[in-house]
Image (tube, rainbow, N blue to C red; front, side, top):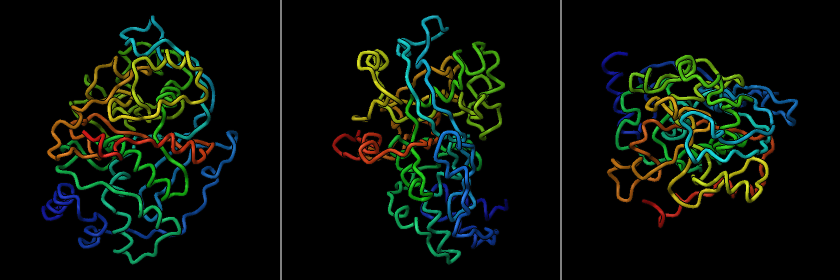
Length: 362
């Protein structure tokens, strides 16, 4: 990249108000042509678990795509056994839960995907190319987008092909709401039960590949091999269900409120399929998987991570932003799409969001 283009890119990232597609067009970068009418993908349209297959979906009106992996329904033991090395008390007692079939992102959501929403790049691209909106665009355009970040949220660790980081659970939920409107398919964050079920891929060991952390380098970026930064998606081996970086690279936000006694309460209450502890307060919420900045024990399938106000410690805004975890350089997310689309009551339960109530903002 020449010096002029590099300066424009830095300005884009730091300022957050310009449109990448628009600047690319001004610079003469080829954007190609994208048909407004996206071709139907039979795998996307599956109506039964038997029909479910992996699929790749292009975000309409862009050249950016993401891949989804089919996760079969089933039952498993949530949490870790008392005998597991370096387990934490909040990982038990183990409880059997039922999981409905769903698709899960093959990779963590990347900056390439996330920036389309956060910087209005889809809208700006339509303007530059003089394209008409799709039938779905009006609702997608109406979804709230973040305020500009106060700094480069990659913190110099890499952008294209790297996982997006530093977003709050509210921001990740809103991205999912936008993607749902944009594609016409229902996307959301995983529950922590769905996340652990997908991570294990039928295994009962500390990691999906076994109990020996010495093998972790083959499958994950962690503190011992990351050179103190995150890495591009998909550079390590996947789990048996085809999910990359499910251990390490960045920890992944889930839908749940964190509760140290959650599993004991599930046993008492007899929770049904895909148990979810709905979020009613800002902290703590759940992230899973461990990150480039964590030791191996924090990357175990059952390891639970709870958010804290420290994740916004350096945020200069008063009140602090509802969009950014400025100090959570280790936190990102991946999306899921349930086969059974929830009804309105279920969606409301899934989307409870205290960030929307300014009285609860930190």
